[in-house]
Structure formats: structure tokens, C-alpha cells
Length: 287
Image (cartoon, rainbow, N blue to C red; front, top):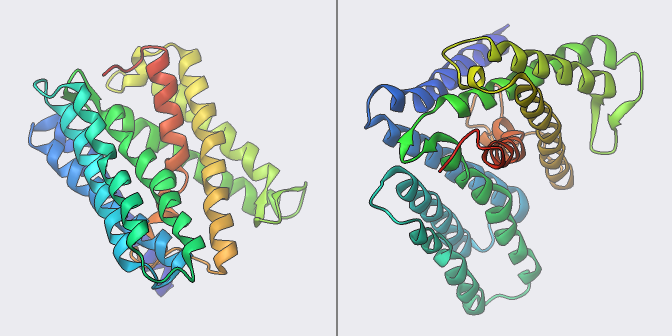
């Protein structure tokens, strides 16, 4: 009971912080900075959790350089997207820290674990780059709108709830497992349950006038829901595989009862960039 209370309270706090970060910018212009701060905090924690999972305590300075560079990448993209005066060509500055990290690799004295240096680059590709792409989801012609990103998170949450309900009630008894070598509890019944709930949520949001999905065709809503569900499951399994290799249950403990920040955003790291690319290709969002 105590653990349930802790999970419930921390879950509510997490949800309120997320809603504030995504919606405050729609109310006041300075709210977009709260979005930036919230997403930067999540980025730093996720990368710290990943590096601790992969390398424990080694290469602390290169890891700090990578995390700092990832924050720089996010901030440069944020300011290019949020200010009309900022030319899009300045986005190339976001990649400068990557080159600094390459040079830093030459200065590492202890080469005995140098093979693990590749995990530092992996953290940037796996976490920092997808997270930086959130700026393309919330900005259109330099104007902040957190609703498209909120809709994508709603799809992820609905997919997770559907997968949990169908998987825990039917998936553990009937049908094959989804990927038993990586996540033994996930089942195909859970997958299709999450798939159905996500698509249902996408269709439902099409009929809510205050949401951006209302302006999309119903077929775009279905397509986005499918992309978010499938890519979200892949993102979940990718993180599960990292944790299985590291022989740990959770990436961290920052959210009591729920685990680490990477545990909460593993699906989003694949689902949201994929959905954003789809929406940009079909002109549903612009930059």
C-alpha cells in the first residue's frame, strides 16, 4: 500500500510538471523557457543514467563534456526555432561539441577501457539527438505550441496503459511473448491492446476542437497513432535491452516508485521524433 501511494503521488507530480512544461508557453511567452529548462533537466538526467549504466564511474570528464555538449545542442536548436532573428544556419553550431568530444578522446590517458568510449557517442545519438528534435515539434514559424507534443505524449501514455491492461490480464496466460529474450513480460496481446487504445485515442483527439489533431485528417491521426505505438514499443525494448545487458531493473531512482528518467521517456525517444518527421513531411507542422 505504501509503495502504491508513493507511485501515485510521484506519478501525479510528474504529470503536473509535464503539463506545465508543455502548456505554460501557450499561455505566456516566457513559458517556453520553462519548457526548455524542464527538457534540459530530463536530458541531463537521462544521459547521466545511461552513462552510469554503461560505464559506471570511468571517463567522468568525457561524460561531462558529452552531457554539456548535448545541452548546448538542445539550446542552440531551441533558440534557432524560437527567435525569428536567428538564422537556421546557426543550427550547425549544435554539432561543435561533438568535434570537441572527438578531440577529448585523444587526451584520455587511460586507454585500458577505451572501447567503452563508444558508449559516450551512443548516448548522444540515442538520447541527445532525438530529445533535441522536440524543438521542431513545439515550434512553428518561431511560435511556441506545446499541444502537438502533448498529443504525442497522450498517445504514448494510452499505448502504455492499453499494453499493461491487456498484457497483464490476457497476455500472461494466452498467446506468444513479444520479445522474451529482452522483456519476458511483454506479449503480443499486450502489444495489440496498446495498439488499439493508441489508435482509438488518436481518433478521439481528432474530434476535440482545441487539439491540433482536430485540424488533421482522420487518416493522418490514425497514421501518427500507429507510428507512435510501434516506435514507442521499439524504444521501450531498446532500453530494456540496455538494462538487461547491465543487469539492472531500473535506469535510476529519481522518480519514486517509477524508476529513472530514462525509464519514463524510453518510448518517447523513438516515437516522438518518428511522428515529428511524419508530420513535417506532410506539412502538419512547419518550421
